[in-house]
Length: 626
Figure 1 (cartoon, rainbow, N blue to C red):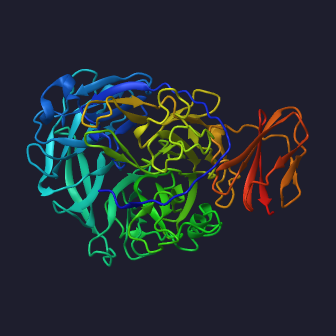
Figure 2 (spheres, rainbow, N blue to C red):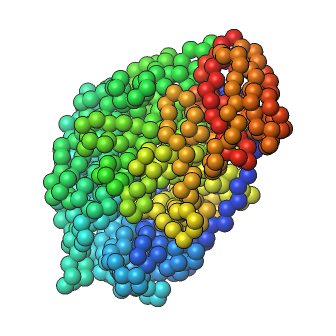
Figure 3 (spheres, helix red, strand yellow):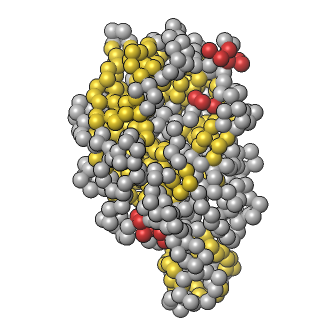
């Protein structure tokens, strides 16, 4: 169940910057309804590097395969053996006995053979409604890989105890599989996290699942006497030795009645797990420059320049996690304001209209100290889609890594508020809700911390702009080393509602051909104070640095500012961004050495100014003081 969402009013005016994109996703399978792909913690796409294979598991479409409503809990998969270029779709069904209705399925490959059909598919799913009502037990099995009719085991495990929604299916050490969920009593979430372990049985060619451990959480119960936390997720390092579980909740650290990140760690391949570590988002030392509370206060102000936010931070409800080559976790989550300046007492709510940041929370020392880097600003938050039983989607944050753990990748959705397009009639303009979602991606290179500019994948596309629902990304990306530099393909599947009714058949599309980076896209290190790292300048691949080592005068600027020393060999696009990364000014200097900008309409404060040409980009700080 989603937590309380609160809104306030804010109007944003920006200048034009037209973005054009074209995408060509691959059509894959179908399902009877939208409820097969709703959870962020659901590892539904899998990649097998040795055989260059990609797989997506989902519920079937009974309008094609028959059986009516009781049969739409059967599972099928779509398989590509050429890196996502083409797929064989709707392979299945997996269940033979069909002992319980499967929901929110997850899948991972098992095996290392270069022939995809010599490997296995390990799958699990939550269960509900058929034949036993309620959230009871877990469906699980192991299937062969084929383009024909698969042979799969079909188990219904833990069928005597209530379960909720399992998440984070992953492999740790070879032949060991893991997933996790919140403890559940059949009606309410309890105060513990349950960790399940599966071991591959070579005799039965199946996975034997056990409840490995139950970890108790010391919650803050002052608000209403009940634990407050959201579904856990988990991942292991590439060598399978270091595991991390993440969730968001309220223990005994930081502000009361807000959601902080919580982590559990294993250093021995999952054999033992640490007690929960709660990260205090309000800790003054959490950020290297300033505090998160200061950031949230400064970013959104009223017409008098006073903060609209109390500055008290809270996590959003959805998040994802991966573990890099060094065994460090990367929790990708949206951080926002827990309360307003006018009503500063938080109550587990999330202020949709105030500052929101998509961030990566990590630790380099096993959890003794924590750090954060800003992946992107977030402008909208939640949207409700479809008729029948409308489904709710927030930013649907997903995180992935390369097989080696050398690079981290992020995907999310956000609506076009005309912040960058500048069109007063743009899709979603004026909306604070995420009603016209577009796909965003970004990357982070672990070795040096260099990051990419966010790429906007669907903005401007005639078919897909504002229509990206529930983009689910594989835990590992595909690395292509065939070109002059490494390329990375993000295996992302998107839901399309065919009739705008969530209870009717839906279509899935694979975006892994369009969602890509190359090594030169990793540009610089992120900065909390300014946006000199180009984080909010979308779709720019930065090559050789622009030879224009321009300078500004006067400093600080008042009503006008001069840019001098521009490179006359190229036309130069000039952009000014505020401290939140919003484009507030744009101009074109045609092969001239200097240009005067009128900044009288901008408020006093810190900005960044960018000069972009065919030869690269230069970014410098700009201070305005009228």
